[in-house]
Image (cartoon, rainbow, N blue to C red; front, side):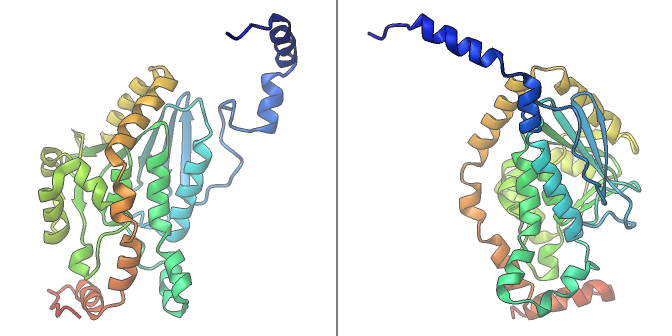
Length: 303
């Protein structure tokens, strides 16, 4: 039997009482849930916080909110900072110019220079997208993608790394990678599987056809459908409902569901970035890209 040493407990209580919350917060920013972001000057993102809800919007740096590597690194950095904000319950992610995102920025200078890089450097380059999605999936607050207009390619991977997707009825969901001669990566295939099952995931990837909002809702890709321009309103309503709940059980419940559903996701998709690197250098990928820019049907040969 253990004996309770009340004298020692009393001494510990006196010691802990001299440590203020402010002193802990000053040494460990974010640990105490400071209700403010860092002073990071976000170049590609606009942030607006109301209590326990944070809204993140892509800045209109191009007409289609395309995902450059610089933007994706910023999203990853932001997720890393938010992970230590204990006063945050919900995060809404949305686009600008009535479009969520057209996916990978094909005009990104980093991509244009990829052919001059070593294999090791190219492998690092193709890890930017998967790292972004993993960082957003790992966030403890509930994440909601508010989708207006197009959601294409890499943007679909990011949206499905969020917990919920609210879309306007003019939204479209499109995964064109196979039509361009490449595989779909960013470890998104297991996420699609969880949402819509193997059969529809194969249709989504292999047929590579745009899906309208109604089909996405029927399949399970979208959770809620709104009138055009109202996706953010519904996302805010959901976020405020989450914000009213006790924050710690919210995080525990989300974590329990995510881990139980995705325990094997990394094991079955850890090679997809290397597969993407392999396929994007093939003759079929070149033909797919040329056909896209020339607005014609591609002729693939398996090379």
